[in-house]
Amino acid sequence: MITSPHNDKLKLIGKLRARKHRDREGLLVAEGEDLVAMAAAAGWEEVALLRAGEDVDPELLDRVSELGSGTRVIGVYRQRWGAPSAAAVSVYLDGVGDPGNIGAVIRSAHALADGPVVLGPGCADPYSPKALRASMGSIFARPPARGEPVGTRVALERGAPPLAGVEVSPPAVICLGSERDGLPADFPSDLRAGIPLREGGPDSLNVAMAATVALYELGNRMAAHG
Amino acid sequence: MITSPHNDKLKLIGKLRARKHRDREGLLVAEGEDLVAMAAAAGWEEVALLRAGEDVDPELLDRVSELGSGTRVIGVYRQRWGAPSAAAVSVYLDGVGDPGNIGAVIRSAHALADGPVVLGPGCADPYSPKALRASMGSIFARPPARGEPVGTRVALERGAPPLAGVEVSPPAVICLGSERDGLPADFPSDLRAGIPLREGGPDSLNVAMAATVALYELGNRMAAHG
Image (tube, rainbow over all chains, first blue to last red; front, side, top):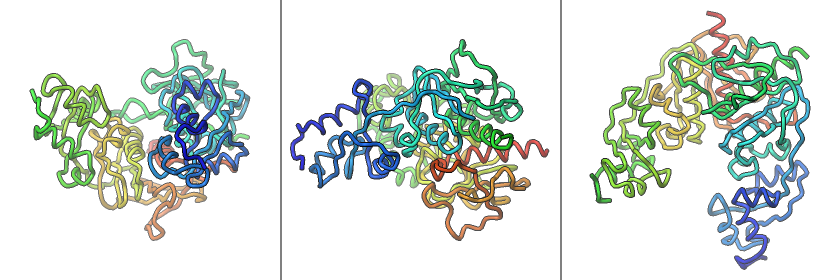
């Protein structure tokens, strides 16, 4: 039982709160029984696993926790990255800086599509605590990929022709940029499509909402056509 | 220029961080230039408006801020509540406890539907800071309603027949419960519908994602049918 705050595992967990260290070590920290159970269910082996009162003094675990007091378990795992690959429908994100949105898209893609979420430049760390929580553990079942999207690139943009009317065959990649700036001006897309919004309403959907609607729309059509 | 932390407006803003006080006073606090500008654009008159360096010592404003340092403006407004009313498509939430989800649904409904978001029992405060931010100001343009939904109640439930195949005419109300428990067992719905998810994936979508997909699906069909 760990009773010293200078324990190496506790120090590692504390350090991994910073993206710099997560990137350098290639590790992630999962807090809570739900996430740890989902990692195990997906066959992830932990680098370290600390249960309050079993492996470590509960108070010391709370000190390195992101969520505050009452943490029952923290696991450390090696990050996994898929390779972009052809799937009927997948998602590519470019410059999406909010980790909650990254995690939410990973969850929605896991629920609605057969392909991975591919992360381009400028995206938040999908292995940050906030992204992990928003993914509800889907990140363990379907780790994100890095690199270039594979398939017909459907750029989701404001004011583009409605996605519902756009012809696209698998493999299709729904491509989204940041809510404010959209995709880079020189992003090489094959098609442009939009989600029609009401006049007088907001000029965009949240990026995770837009991705989910597009996954629903294209997923339904791919299923119907194939 | 306010230079004392004992100033009444500062004390009010601090107090309004607690839902209990927001409910009792019927007030809300909006932080940041974007939200304050959207309130003004929607014709909301402020009860108090404090600009850092103009009306108040910036350090004192930071102290009552939810977002930490560098806050430029905080506005206090009187809460507004719409009445549930018939619209082609609206949303009813029951027991949705996460304020980020409430705000996200308010934003999506503003973008995709003509009706209000109606909040039933057990919902998070839509006028909490987190909900306000997630609404991206849509809450000012389209305040939520409280009470019973008006129209054909389409209960969104796991494993129910696909929404895409369900016949429904306006006024339709998409009804959602909490992610974990769903709608109450005795909720009086007219129709049940679901969003088909892949096998092997998560057993639910995030509640705001599900609401947005349903708004998209029904909104498109209402528009197509006239």
